[in-house]
Length: 513
Image 1 (cartoon, one colour):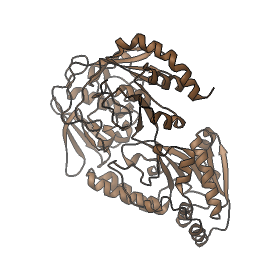
Image 2 (image 1 turned 45 degrees about the vertical axis):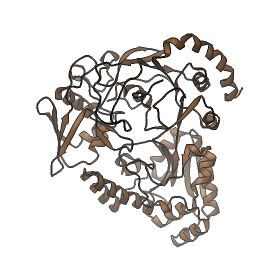
Image 3 (image 1 turned 90 degrees about the vertical axis):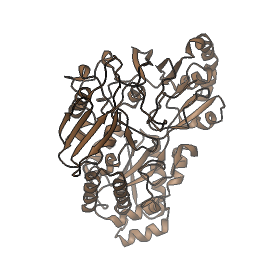
């Protein structure tokens, strides 16, 4: 029985359960997850499933607006010294934790210190932190060793980020996740219970202190409209889809692309794209082989490829992909068109001429790909055919993902390999910016721009420098972006306030039924 038939066959049974629970469920949002999170401790856990639940109850000093710009959340403002080394953060007054305690700088200081030492992403900032101190009850001062432009973006990224807990909870805690009894935050919903294999439930926090301003992405007004949010593990995708259709669930995540067109036409269903797309990357070897330091040959390979046919074959429905050459999507604060005229030329004859001029004589070019991710493999097949038409001798090597990861660490084993990347809040976190990531792109031009990029906190200046870096990527071609791929979730059309897309994780403040 195929997936569509399974969904239809289970819908009737699901509807019977929905009738019995409908009266109770009016004040409860029921979210069908793919499974249970490992923990909800946001400082040390980077699971998206955990953040989907936890960011309703834990908050940081900053968050992201709809354009992914960092804006104050528990902070009320900040000042940076002229030399860029001292950051002074003012805190909002009147904010309460779920235990009734008022939030002060003592809580923020304890939370930042634990995150800086043990947090999943804390060392990215704190390796450059000299000291953190509290100035009175509502101000924090961070002193840096050198200016570090991405600091606010890292503060705003709650996944593995600096969630603020009461000092009484977090002081003395290490890298092990805190226990559910310590799930005490400042958000619009508070922790109620975790029944393994049944649900995680959050309930409305009546003393919540919302930030000011109109709702904008994750920023601005947050109102808890539901009595409770119930996150229910439902591993079977057919059951998740049938459950939303029948009324068992109000929302379900991670739905396959082959169901998209059918569900998108269903008036009882809302399809919600994830606003932070993943994107494929084909890395080139800068340490060994025929592509080492041969930027002209890399540009020839880049010119040979037309990205659209691969997206059509590997992803399918046009709403689920974008042939976007910018490393961040349109609407994102980091979007730039620098260099993107070279993104998808598909010029086989021009590529042949360029390759010959670069000294290419038909030597094999080893291209590693894994079948563990079907869209990797399907895309690589299309690219291999296009490159062959342009005269390149591509040796396609197919491995399981674990073997590919092992081999990509060995420079003599490959020339190209396929991977993909998720959303990050700051371009400095894109893997190609890491000098030690397989591919090992570390040219003087990159080093100079990277130093400028991290040395300033001015948003306009950083965006201008990022545009230069993206242009350099298209010139030196350490990697080729393959396009944006959007995952999607579904919801009952009765839910109001969801919008057409999420930023990264769905949020259910300001949402009603």
